[in-house]
Length: 209
Length: 157
Image 1 (cartoon, chains in turn purple, orange):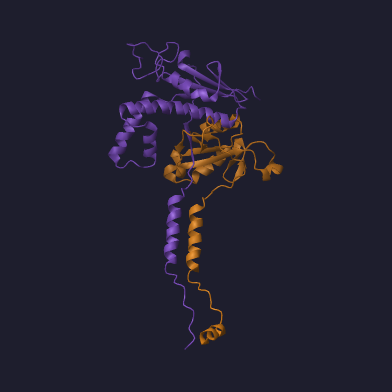
Image 2 (cartoon, chains in turn yellow, green):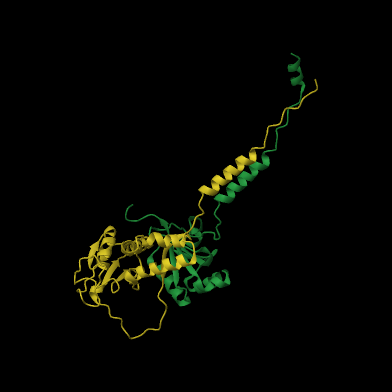
């Protein structure tokens, strides 16, 4: 009998295994994408003497001091209560029934001492220069959350879906077709008009320096 | 018996290398998938604050600004005061405009007016520094900004 070489291991299935692994990793890993809170800065304008008058009751003042403590409407507050307070303020609808400012979709307490309607309501945040960035973002996050909560509520009442979920779908390109996109955009804008995001930021105080 | 003797006399069989390319390809694919391409070499500490009411960033039209204390290996040289980084180097507040204009020119021409500034600021930085950056951005008329955060919530944790 002649010397026989050892039979070679069948490597045919190796490619299959490699592809299987490749597909597994392709499916499971998500490419990291940065996310954050988007803001539009006010454009630089020459100073004018004209003063925009906002009634004090339509203004919700949030003060953050250098040791990261919150002063909301002249009262000390914990960060966890800020969202509720902002929702109560925005949703108040204090204008009396029958007046042009009356807010028919507000579900708040209708306290005449608080905001007239969501369109008039302005939230003003004032920071100290030594406030930590962490606190600054936490406060912004809570205030945006208050707006999102109210917008979600209204979009569910009007259209039966959540504002935040639909915005996300639109961003991710889950909505197909131009007409569908435009129709959705229009609806989203309607909701945005019901609760326009009016967040103002005052120049930080220099007291911390 | 004769079979045994025959085998012993044969040389050591060579290990098949047919599957080696596959293994190499597999490793290649794996690293291709998991590595995140990083454009900038971070010179500052960058622990981002937490937030959950977030939007996605469109990477093709954004310019990054980093801020924070210098990383530990640069602290001997640059001290521990918070600094601003654009691109691969530290930038002074007065130099931001120049650095940003330069960074904007690297974007696609049709996206240059829609530029969005992504602020990656360490959570321990003072808000004053962020305000200064924002003032510079207003001067430059780059009004769209986004504060990059990590998922989470400050209240529940």
